[in-house]
Amino acid sequence: MNEPMREICVVHLVRFHNGIEPFRRFLESYRENPSGIEHDLLIIFKGFSGPEDLQEYTTLLGPFKYFALEVPDDGFDITAYLTSVRHYSDRYRYFCFLNSYSVIQDRDWLEKLHRQIVRPGVGMVGATGSWQSHRPAWWLLPLTIAGIFFRTWKEGGVLKRTVGALVACLQEGLFLLDFCPFPNHHLRTNAFLVSGDLMMGIECPLMRSKRDAYRFESGKNGLTMQINRKGKRILVVGKDGMAYEQNAWHESRTFWQAEQENLLVADNQTRDYAEGGFSRRRYLRQTAWGTDKSSCDSDGR
Image (cartoon, rainbow, N blue to C red):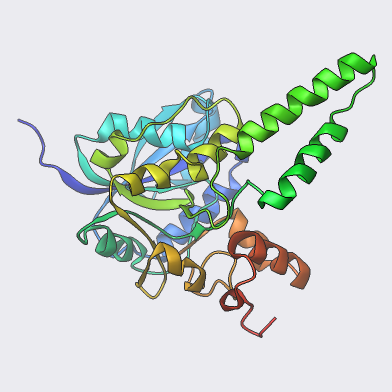
């Protein structure tokens, strides 16, 4: 007899290459911030070669109820996420994915996400979103391509150098065209909740490079765009439990905004902003949100 479908599987990715400290920080935050809703915890061990590598990690997991999935260190985070969905989509309605650097910031964090995902027409919710685009403004594109040309000018004959630089420019141009110009709305994949059925229908290319990962997170045929094309809404959820529509993400006080005081799940990118000085924060804020004044620091900067 088949087991009844359970509601939520929380999937945390642990990559051996990153060392144990990020995992320790995650478990501390998971223990200190009850989720507010029943769920199962799946730990994906990525790139571990054997029991010796796992021992220290499983010792930390001693107080927690969990089950594990081991995968090779191929592809990127999303590759492991999709593997977990293929394994367990017949067991859970929703999957909450947390990457290796995720640190939970508030109690009832999962209940807040779940409360929004079950609303009619909602396809995916997450802790952070961005409008950032890898594609520069049209007037900067020639300068970008010219910069690539000169940076790839190598030693050798003139013809060889020219051909090599032109090939690099062509590759860069094709990469940039895979993204919508700013504002390029996309949910960041550090912490997000989505149904297993919807994830099973997502097209994911073979992940050969970091650029492939960028394309999948924020490209024209990336995760957000595919779900949008299905007519589904995509929301950012804050500590306040409120859901923010894509055009209001810049007012959520989460990712690279104000003091990020409404951030539900932090990661290495939000820590970069939190620890940054005035110039660093301004650069990151403008990268994600442009020059919108609603994204300024809480002290008005």
